[in-house]
Image (cartoon, rainbow, N blue to C red; front, side, top):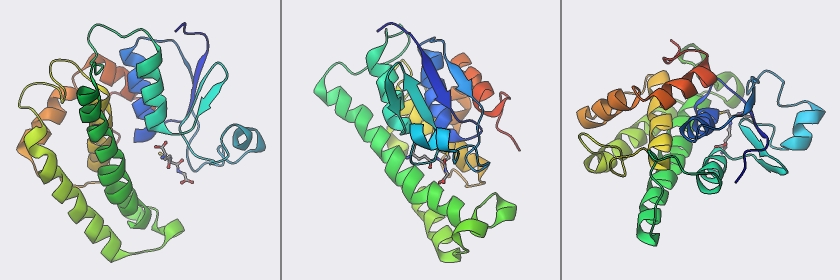
Length: 222
Ligand SMILES: N[C@@H](CCC(=O)N[C@@H](CS)C(=O)NCC(=O)O)C(=O)O
């Protein structure tokens, strides 16, 4: 598909990062709007008209708006010319394995662990308990769930390669975005294998470009 007009709203968090990373992998031109999730910028009438959820990220290509990060990432992967160094599944079985990683990351790591933790963690630990209320047990069990899920996927994280083999894939984008935010929130990744995978992945130039787009620096902010 021709790259006519791509726009992305949102920065400074791991979900817009997923979209920036795939756009960098596909070497596409895009315009990004540096709006934050809780600055009021997502609550203006203009923005709510584009995304009634009032959240970031939001992705637009020509006449389509996509307000879920995973759907936007997949849209780019499926609709533009595939770069030589990016893995796209070529059979239903391969697709199921990429999907398995993506849903695992979106549900088990993101929604059920990281986001619950973030909502109820204290403000001094970068949490949002001022908005969603303190819930120490939810914080404790979401950390436990994260550790359990990391342990469960450890054997499928290769010692040298990317998750699907020699090339980066959407599975890596999802997994790395979750590892990244876990580190940001001081959740310990209790797996040497996964920590070493993370250390390798952050060297990739497209990853670094996406980091700069998202956080305005190549490394995670302190
Ligand atoms: N499922 C959505 C979640 C989007 C989301 O929750 N974004 C956060 C920032 S990363 C946000 O805008 N939060 C503001 C709010 O919950 O009101 C996605 O993956 O795109």
